[in-house]
Amino acid sequence: MSVSVILACGGSSTRLGFDKLMFELEGTPVFIRSIRNYEEIDDAYEIVIAAPFDSIYEYDNIIKKHDIKKPVKIVAGGKNRTESVIEAFKNCNKSTRLIAVSDGARPFTNPDCIRDCIKNARIFGASILGVPVKDTIKITDDDFIVDTPDRRKLFAVQTPQIFTREIFVKSVQFALDHELEFTDDASMAEAVGVKVHITKSNGMNIKITTPEDIIIAKAFAREKDV
Image 1 (spheres, rainbow, N blue to C red):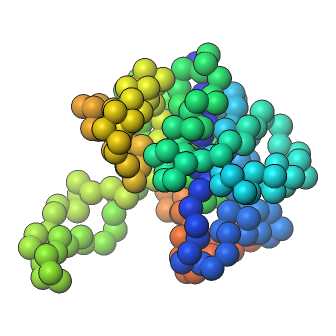
Image 2: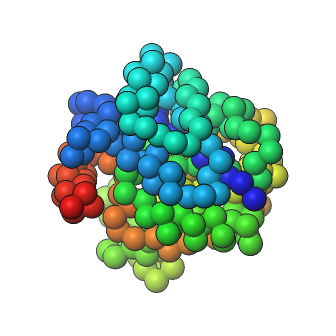
């Protein structure tokens, strides 16, 4: 069962002041590292990148310089993540049975974790990567604690988030029909009643968002490239 990978490469990177996806870690752009995680996955048939319209040419040029062997398409994303993922999905091969949505800003996703997530998506219909939270979480209201959820039941979710085509189509149609925006794709599936499985990942699968993440990513890149 082949997999189409949607790589979400939108966002403004306002917290960093520069395009985090183009930022080079040990000489390799972040989004290229994210692509290469899927180069090792035999079941990954293609990669469809949702990128800002005015960056498509630059993405294409960079990809050509890095000898990517998987088929790659670059499409213009929408105004938000949900719209961008939907636009990318429209360009996925119609024969693929699993849709994997991944953040372009996660350059260190472990290929074995991706394989486990694919396997579980085949079994359960939907599976995403996640890690148990290490900190105690507080729910607040006007800066005062109102509840402390059981940490043993809490996960920090990551990508990829993988779904059968049928579940993904149903989720996308719901988002379109109700003009809804979701912060992750599992929430879109949950909204139509899908029970989403979590595949355990690891702490290296960071999403680069803040300046502190760049420091951590540089260290991970040096370690990985040794």
